[in-house]
Length: 303
Image 1 (tube, one colour):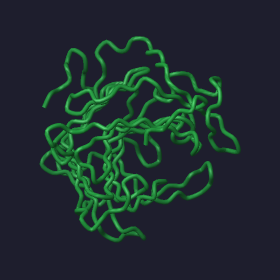
Image 2: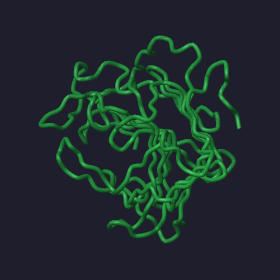
Image 3: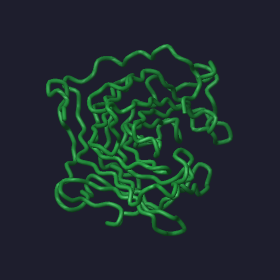
Image 4: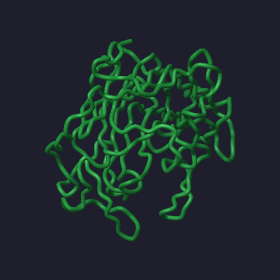
């Protein structure tokens, strides 16, 4: 395992999962199978993705032992759902931040479950929706998989507007070398600088993103597709705000599909550590936006 160079990065926050329980000063739990959208005044089931699991904070679904965190998706009935699992985040359910980061290096070392219908992820969300509802305020995905494709790791960013037609996504598929799978130990990292986001798997640089956009324009309370340059928030929005960390195993949903009879449960995401670094000496000026397509130039989504 290779560590980031100490002359470039300095550790500012970590969880090595010592002891026998979750450190509640660092993590809280999302609970249930959805959320209330105060903009539309409606309940959104399945976390907006038609997910099938009910999130709990039960020892059935999350444990700390032998310096390892285990998030476990289980096939069991709960509150009208057919599965239970857990989603941990570095902010409280009421929105109070426990830990946030704007720029730096964030890394997870983990073993990831796979199988049809599984959707494990290590990712980041904005602490405050400064530019509007998802995805106008952004999302950074260090690791997710299509459940039945264990040889591939996805690195993604979400951005755009909060309207369903204006949300944009860029995803890179990284094939693991030498027949490896996500069930092996791997380190997933992002190096986030003003105007640039770089992803790594086992210190292999998989992709750099230096083009995105954010639009807060709404019509009848719903975000719309940006039609002109003045509709855009100032670069490098939305990735110029503090984000918090998230770890979870979802089941089902419109991305991986539903589990098959061959999908193994319990499905366990095992995390060795989470570490966050600052760049020694800080950052230079914001990197200018790269030349690319904006919504009015028929931007093509990649998923």
